[in-house]
Length: 226
Image (cartoon, rainbow, N blue to C red; front, top):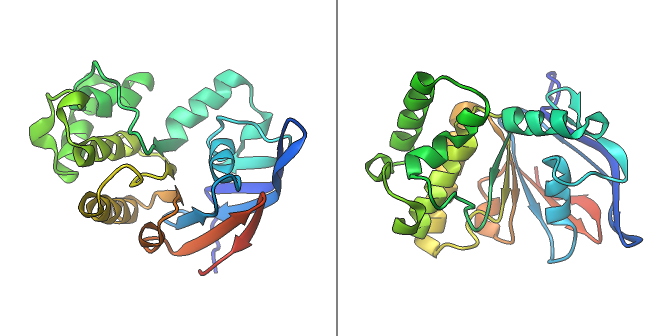
C-alpha cells in the first residue's frame, strides 16, 4: 500500500499515428524506487509509450505527470527543463557524444543544469567509481567496449539525480555476460538512489530485476506480476 504520491503517472493516454491507434487509454503509476518492466511484441507501442512518458512524444489525449507536474500542459521550454531535471534516459545504442570523454559525457547533464564545475567534478567522480569505469574517464566512446559504454550511459542517466529513469532495451546490444552485469548494476543503483525505473525489454532476464511486469499488446496494457 503506497501512501506517497507516484513519481510518474499517466492517465488514459491515447496516441495515434496516421489515424492508427498506437496507445489506447493507457494508465500507469510508478512510485519512488519502483522498477517496472514494459514488455510486449515489436510494434505493440512500448517505445511510443516510453517516448510519451519522457516528454519526447505528446499523447493525443490524457495526461502524464512526473513529480506532480503535468507534461501535457507544458510548452517546449518547460518540458525540456523538466526532462533535464527529473528524467534520465538509457538507450540500446548508448547515444554517447563521440567527441567528449567518458567524464565529459557523464557530466553533460550537469552542464545543462548549470551545476558548478566543482560539484559536477565530485558527482561525476563518485559515479564513475561506482560503475567501475573511473580508470576510463579520459577515454572517448570509440575506445570503450559495449559494456563500458553502457556503464557510462547509466552514470550519465543518474548524475543529475532524476526521479525516473527510462531505459529502452539497455542490454539489447550486449553479450550475455555484459547484459547480466549491466542489469545487476541497474538494480543496485536504482535501489540505492530510490530512483524509479521503466525498463522496456524483450528479455525475461531483464524483467526479473523489476518488481512489476506490464505487457503491452496492440496499444493496451495488461498487468503481469507484481
